[in-house]
Image (cartoon, rainbow, N blue to C red; front, side, top):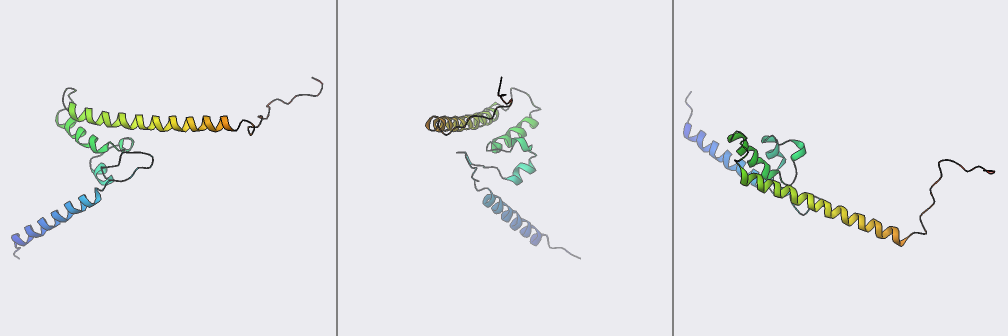
Length: 133
């Protein structure tokens, strides 16, 4: 049984092109509710690069090359500085964004409490008052 290698290589190339097109199509940026940043790394990329669940956020696309660099450089702290800086900056921006959102929520709650003080009810006392005490 003879196998035509040129046909097999053509098929392999066409499959490779199809998979690259699928990756590009799947790489569309996903919206994250409540955030200005979009998810760039797909779930499949994060799984294949073994990104821990806790780190699968909007900065995961920067963590993947950082981890590859760390492994290739044997985790030397003075290596991969550019990748680490870009990843840490992204994480810092996410934290600051969440803090601003929480500050806005607290301000809205404070405004709503100031507007309606008459509607607030007295809490039920835990120890009841006796009649003659």
